[in-house]
Image (cartoon, rainbow over all chains, first blue to last red; front, side):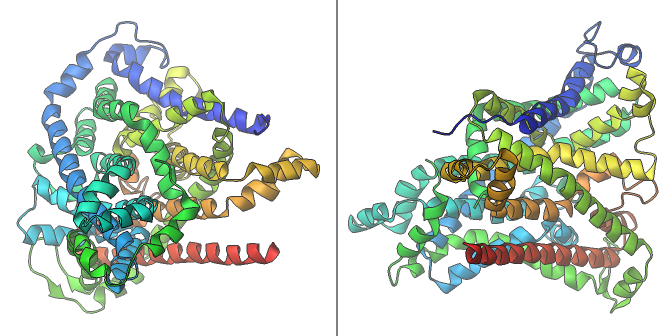
Length: 274
Length: 306
């Protein structure tokens, strides 16, 4: 057992950082319940003297339910296929190790990790226009799938490698096909990794800004981050309403985080610390 | 299931039997196909477009080297490069020591530290757009925190002065990403064998000596992973800067990614914008390779040392 060692520097930094993290978050939440008069006159850290949900009403009436739905469609439409095909590729890379083709595929995905894929946005835009997909949700989904493949494959291959080879051999001896082993063995044993990868990529897509900004145009196709930005442009003076929109767009993620945080935190570090 | 990183490569290599690889290769095809269409083809496309003239709507013409000539002779380019590297280096220099310190702290098994880790993660849940909007409001000289608390040093025109705006960008980046890197360091610290510290204690090394002679060298790979993510990631700080400062005041925070967007989608000059994009790709690849080499050479010297 390790001794409990005092670490004053770390302890001070730890609590200080908590304060730095919490101050803006606290301010966002309390301010979103203030009316404009309260915002201008009250101490910024004081609880609202006259709490109101008017700001939230304004946000919801500004078409946010539609933007919310768009974000849900884009996120789910990206993550389900992206994780499924990344899992298949990762399985192939682990089971077919030694094959030149698969080694090349793996190398290609690893290269994708080093390249800032946003830099390819102009040809992506051209491609989307030529495919007649401009200003549709599919225009955001397809490149998002491609952008989330490299990291997903990397994390999933690491996890599939940890499946004991004896299990594969036993199933193989029983006459299982590769597809059968993918579903019957690799899938159940790497479920935590699949959840991690889904949450991590889902977060990136949910919060994505550049692809919706460039690949869509009409208000009906807006996703939440873009809607936040335009809402802020319209209501820049009404800070409480703007902050209410920030709270509303973040709330679903915070709820999901509260439910799945253990897997996210442990899986994330397992995926990166290699 | 828990990951056992050290065992991974060995297990992977031995699972294959001769003749097996053909039967699974098809499973990689869907991912390969979509990655080629929306990843590899655009990568080649951006290089081709850097030699073309296109306004984003009409037809595309070849332009030879003219885009490269005009961008490389544009005084805006050295400025954007400078700002990009300035933000990259400063944000790395701020984030790394703090993340390392917090990671060591979080690696302790005390329960309150687990709770802190949960709270630290919250900024990562917010979109960059939301964070930028929040800080814009928070730092407003007339209605923000400084004015509300009547503190003059907080009530400056944070986003209206070049130096201050750059500082704000680095602060906000750190606020957003330090939690993530702390968790990477936490995992790294937990993999250091406790026996190493016990041996050092017996030898009479104090905590500070242990930190520099055990913790930091043992975290070499973690430091390289985290630094690679920070450095390559900093090339893509588009949304945060776009919403927070839009590159301003003036061009003070006009990083390459923003420069690409403005040339391409505001000035409708897709050719020159593609030149910037090619530079971004090259810088990203170059830095990733450099950091990987750094990792390789340090392991060699480490082994020699032992």
